[in-house]
Length: 523
Image (cartoon, rainbow, N blue to C red):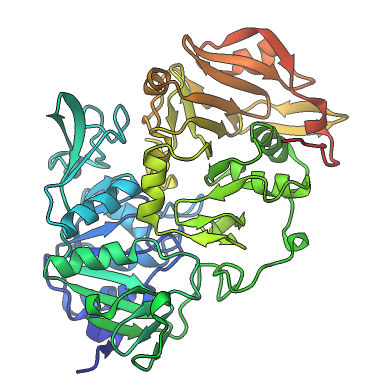
């Protein structure tokens, strides 16, 4: 019997109450045709109902027009466990899944992406769950939010503290999905899957194993179907013995924003001059100062936001290749891409499965991480995952907690406060209008990174803004550098909502940061 079915036929295989795992990362590898068919079936038939959905990294675009939002009809999802979520455009109605979460229609948890992959792996092996210290003293910890995103989730705790071998650990249950929905480039008639046109594999193999070993089914969406026996065995990343259904979707996008770019999948290497370097502005000043923290030969993780421009600063300065970038979706090396291609890299050296990349991150095997912040508090803790006033404006933590748990060095970057109007003039920072929302606060809205735990572990933590550089020391936050043109008291200390220490060796940020020409960076 042929494994090839239409998306609608595949959707009919999902039963009420099923646990459905989806392998996707925002726009990367999203099996959108299958998810759309599931949503259409529900609207037509009222089934499948009461699903539990698992998304290690967000499924679909960040605007909520694809992916998980196809399933966000009232009554369709009962529980959702996600590493991240669509946040929606500013000043627009929240994505459907956020409407369900805020209305308490679903129990929702934001579990670190790497831990979600761990839960699936433990389910595949029929082990009793995950013991980890990742997330201790953050919102992940049951002594804080226990990953719960709403009241409905808090009523059904997902994670607990346990004692094992004389130490305290976090325990997450194993996940045994009834259905895994994954995506690849090509399937042969036996269901063997290759990913030659994709920018990652994410956790396709791990998710398929978890469903197969739990007695579930695996649905694979692909661009094309080949004759059996025609795929090279070294190219097959998921064997056909794990795949039950193939859905051919010839128009599937490579990413949310890309029909097809061979540089994303490593089929072609772009000339370095083809990459846009950041325009000279305040954000570029911040990215340049972050770049000064880098060392040649390092492996460096990079996150969304201002720090995503650091690879292009190095490229402009003639240092491309001296730092190897590693991102949670699995790319190693190359040039990480921006905007809604984030999670992809052009000209990558290798693609590592996301679960393996997260093991690398969780144990601190890399040299440094460059990440953003929404808030910083007096203890040095950072919030990237929730703002109570507008929770749907954030995407959750994704892999942030996995990455920061044991990282040797972290450089957080962002604007000092929100809403300020600034410009650079004659090598100085000029503030025309002060911001109204402090981002350095007495206590963050949610602890995504624990400053207290960082000090206990001896992590090297730096916060780079356009106005100043701050270091986390034993006593708290200390200003070590200030931008030229600013008054320390008026423009820095008075604009923080919590007291900051000032280094007795306070110095000016280097003037070359504030000039439009290349800065002559040395690593």
